[in-house]
Length: 314
Ligand code: TXA
Ligand code: MG
Image (cartoon, rainbow, N blue to C red; front, side, top):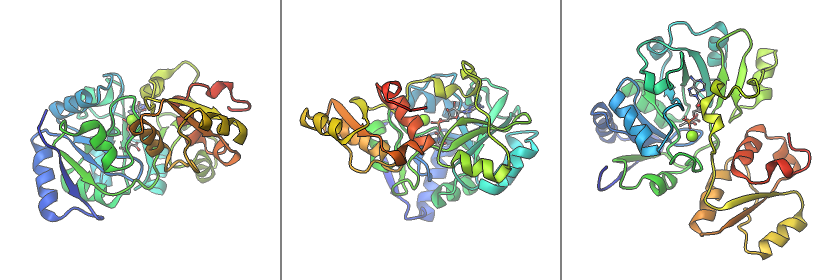
């Protein structure tokens, strides 16, 4: 698509001239990678179908997997959804700006292609200072994670360049992502909130705040969050989960890549590192603390070959 990819530094904010260059580029219908507190996003103007098409094309993303609309102020919500529920406002009020995505009834202004033709729209207000700076200046941006479809999400500007160098015109480098896993997605249409994707904000934190349980999507109803049915977060190397230090040592001897102290923050970077080192196998020791992290376990389930053969995993 283009010959060279520029990198702007945002530490923690963009300079005025870089911000204006980014805004001009987005106004032309181009796309750019921007930092958020979860993972980097591949951003394009939400109301510009040509920009949205570029996002899908660059990622190789299936058309039925809708995008998240990112906003920088509550004033932008009106253009996206005609009637967010009470539940939506309660959660937004408590957790925004932050790593929570809320599903609401979609306004006709939001293009079909952004929403995979669903009657709903996914919205989030990120807390990364540079993401907010851009959104407040520009307005709503559609932004899926800035990785090739199926690859681990990018938690640093260098990861975005691995997938899109020479393909997108600009990457805004806002440093390492604070959380390292994607936002939690909750459907707020209907009386009972449904947890569609576990993420950076835990189920417990949300349930405690609401004083009610989050329900789960019905089995087989993949349409509830279309993205969750695709293979995800997967490196080229095979990921094997192990339960003991002994098994880990055996695989290490066989040449497997073994991350040290794996956490939600480092998972994607470690998966990418194994690929850079051209390892064919990654062995991950699942310890007791990791088992308690629903979002981390969800991503390990999607990335690994043997999740369901490990004892006692949900
Ligand atoms: O943390 C994040 O959410 C990152 C950063 C960049 O904000 N974005 C992200 O976007 O993870 P993406 O496109 O990789 O994942 C969006 C998820 C997908 O699983 C998609 O199916 C779901 O949100 N989604 C989007 N719109 C939806 C809708 N209307 N109903 C149900 N699920 C929806
Ligand atoms: Mg993604």
